[in-house]
Amino acid sequence: MRVVGESEMVALGRRWARCLQPGTVASFRGDLGAGKTTLVRGLLEGLGYKGIVRSPTFTLIESYTIADISIHHFDLYRVEDPEELELIGCRDYLNNQDICLVEWPDKGGDLFSSPAIAFEISHTKEGRDVAYRLFRDDPCWTENEGL
Ligand SMILES: Nc1ncnc2c1ncn2[C@@H]1O[C@H](COP(=O)(O)OP(=O)(O)OP(=O)(O)O)[C@@H](O)[C@H]1O
Ligand SMILES: [Mg+2]
Image 1 (cartoon, helix red, strand yellow):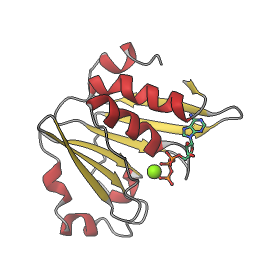
Image 2 (image 1 turned 45 degrees about the vertical axis):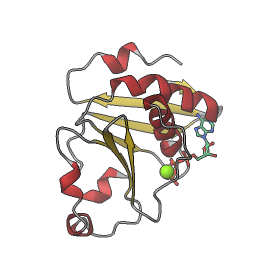
Image 3 (image 1 turned 180 degrees about the vertical axis):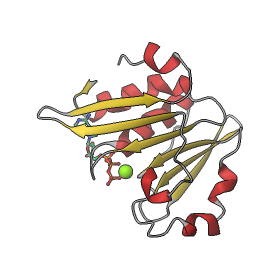
């Protein structure tokens, strides 16, 4: 899907937010600066979050509570050993209530290797291409892929 400009990326996330059921794990792959955090910001805004979305580049995790649902936004870029994630209890976030949005999922070993949906964002000449793969049968994502 062709997505040109930050505001389009946010709009896409806002619309897709309705597909984030409790317990959903979504992963985001793409080069540095591809737009992963921007898409996550759209998702959070679509869930009703009004504050600033910070990239968890240094903190590893930023957690939000929106309408009684906990959403954990990970950026695993700096993780060197997946064991670091076990030590800080990340596995506890994988439950059927919380939503996990994970940038650089491959740095987490097998922890986030089984998402419901995996996004892949790539740079194009005009903007970005957003592709996704579904690992659960859920028509919501395809039905709402318009801007
Ligand atoms: N569809 C788009 N078209 C053009 N620019 C975009 C688009 N989406 C995001 N951007 C811009 O790309 C830049 C990087 O975005 P972002 O921080 O979301 O990337 P990221 O993939 O999370 O990077 P990192 O790997 O460092 O976490 C920002 O300046 C953002 O405004
Ligand atoms: Mg990011």
